[in-house]
Image (cartoon, rainbow, N blue to C red; front, side, top):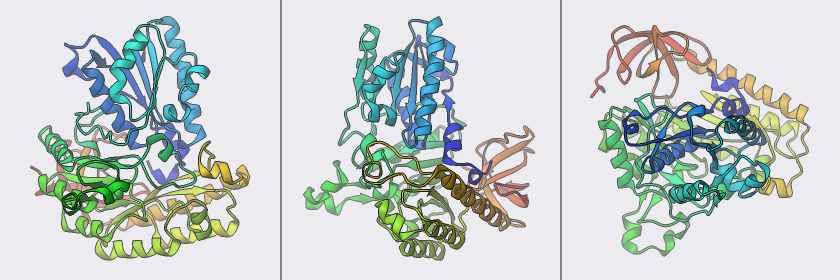
Length: 489
């Protein structure tokens, strides 16, 4: 499936997943927990933390809604459509609850933080509302709803990272896993609710991150994605907010670990574990990070680098602290250091005051970069953001849709351009599982994050194999495996 062929609305629609059965806890737990997650990878990672916390409270995770004693929906507030989807799911939960009166329903995540107790008033089915920094309070909140009272905790934290929680891996393929390294965001982009729903930036202890990666390797995982709203802002100096580094001791400053340092630490701790990361911010990404990627073979050659717009005027209105020219220079430097690096994007069509010239600037920047794939969506006003407060949403929906379609069409063209570059080459691929379209074929990804499909033969999930590429679409490479690589451990 070509991500380039979908708007963010479609991506969010397809990102709903019920949780997987955790069989090793079945004997000791006697209550059933069902979790659905919407939106970004951070929400899916958070759901794994929630499942771990509740496992100690007697909850066994199920993928059958009708079995559940507790239903949690981990929400996204990036667009109005995402919140609408959640409300529709709550209607479904209500229908089930009528046949199972003891079932309780909770809303987690960004929508919970944004709407707070209003959810309890508007959605009579909701018993509990919990913000992203309050998951450790879930046991107390569940006791409240067990006693017939509604429960709310949406307090944002300045230090919570959940670094001491070992996540329960939900919907796991046993090969790839998410590892959260930062929480919150200090970049006040005018269109974004994240700073208001997830709070200020704080980073997790690097040793706890390395330990989690080591444990994942021992469990058979072969790829991790280091997660944060802005991974390039990672900075550990013993705890505290990034903005407070100037208050730290000289020893803390001298021993501080930035994102490049964290990448090196993780790469060296497990030399055969593939390492990805997401998401980067152009204004914060340093060439030291790129050089670190080039230095270690196990750090994947892919950077998700949201640009949002190719117009300097619109970038300024978005409070994006990079210009078009600075972004293009960063792209040039990345490709100079890592020539085969895959680069993907986020782009917003129809931001307030966007003109046809602004839109053309975006298209011309896309032509310059020729992204491997991207996430594209039309602007959706989010209450509480600076754009909603100060800018009129003045681009008609018909124009938004037209511009979005032009962006998608161009991205599809660039996707095909990029996949054609692989024809005739042999690429290392990590097998993630069976192809969605054929049980006779494996699906995996290149280091640059391009999907590859090939006949199974005698290989297995988790193997690193060399695949000779023979054909492609705009989204997928096709080939034949020619042997295992030296990275199999």
